[in-house]
Length: 124
Image 1 (tube, rainbow, N blue to C red):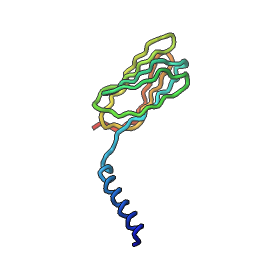
Image 2: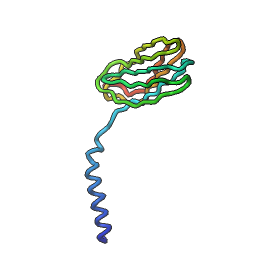
Image 3: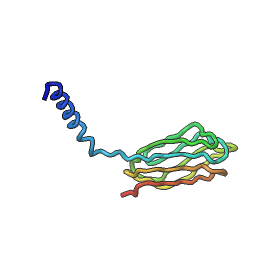
Image 4: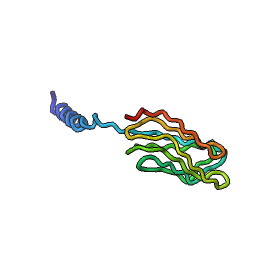
């Protein structure tokens, strides 16, 4: 083996040994899409989930908002926003559990209705 090739092999082996402990780690995420199908813009949207929350100032009618989060603990998800005619809306959705992962769709509908569609791993 030439000296340059031997050095490259040593660097590759060192990098692999540093990355090996990371192979056992798994990060659990829930990919969320909020779909505004209410027919009007919504403002001051907040989504509360176990141990944290996220939000956005506004979502235009027909627009989507995407967010990815990790769940620490367990509890229900709650959506709060200001809809048409300055109507405050608060809806509680399904319970989420630590180590769940998958997709969650939150659909904002006319009249303050909200649908939750989830494809999440079962909690253990």
